[in-house]
Length: 53
Image (cartoon, rainbow, N blue to C red):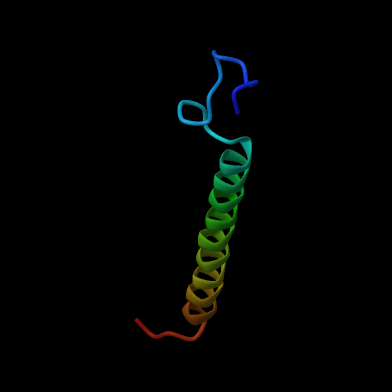
């Protein structure tokens, strides 16, 4: 790559694909944690109706 500009090399710049991939994984992880939280909340509320304390 001797015709590449001197101010931009692949060693010192991150690929845009990496950051978009990382953001999508972060959003997916947040959605998974939220889904587990909703299921646990519904399960907890469903058990409160017939429990005798």
